[in-house]
Amino acid sequence: VYKNVTRKDAVDNRQVRKDGWTSILTGQGMPNSRLESNVYIPDVCLTQFMLTELYKSDGIAKRIVNLLVDDALRTFIECDIELQKELDRVKAKQHIIDAATWARLYGGCAIVAFIDDGREMDRPLNYNNLRKVISFRTYDRYQITWLQEDLSKNFYDEYYGEPEVFTITPYEGESFRVHRSRMHLMGGERLPNLEKVYNDYWDISVLQDVYTSIRNYAISINASAEIVQNYIQVVVGINDLELTLSGPNGEKSVQDRLKIHDATASNYKAVFIDSQKETYQKHNSSVAGLA
Image 1 (cartoon, rainbow, N blue to C red):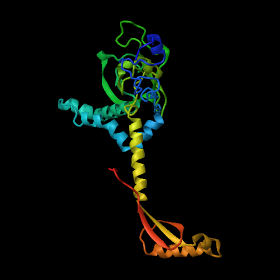
Image 2 (image 1 turned 90 degrees about the vertical axis):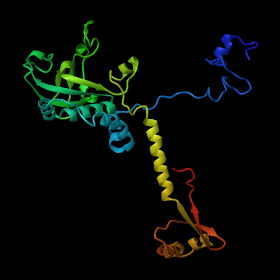
Image 3 (image 1 turned 90 degrees about the horizontal axis):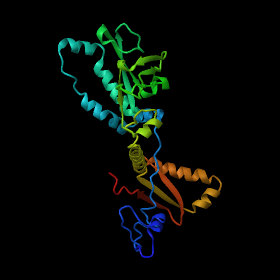
């Protein structure tokens, strides 16, 4: 195969694959190979609106998002009675379920703890002066932003290069700023570092990499429904149909004949064609291989 072909020429002409296998007879590894003509094209990047509508309207997508969360939190933690009462008071389990669900759906979410510790929300939590946990609130990634000056610039900080303070924008109400120590962040599917920069440092939705499969499945289901709806097609042949339609009251005459047939069928669908003599046939749509 490599006779009179230098390695540089072979590489330039894509005649050498990385595994070293190539064949002139079958085209394997050659520029005209069918496999070589296949290239990867990135799929559509799902937006907040698309993700929301998928979750609302597609049962498969909703199950993909909910399955792990529902399984993991089917029961809650075991603890003493007093702590259990406090967790029930602040609805901790429901907030964890919500945060984990929206993190999987949107690629990120946070639980914000409103705590009475004598400090403002944008200041680090004072663990030595914890008086009361007032409530928890859950915010998805599209409600959470930060500025460049909010990033930690201390090399010895646990969260170096990440925001120390976040801006929360509720869908109702005014924006406020929260220190990282007062919130717990959850993510979705991981991204490489460069892609994470393009995604505002958030993960991606768990629906992103299965979107094409969900879409194709829905198309198949809808197409199957169309086949079932038109499973039986009736074809009626009428002698000199074209002449009948061109004559006076021709269309009404055909419609009257159709009504007579329709009166004898509970669900009638028919196609009229010109024929040398009257015929009546039923044609079934093929459902071979349809699960």
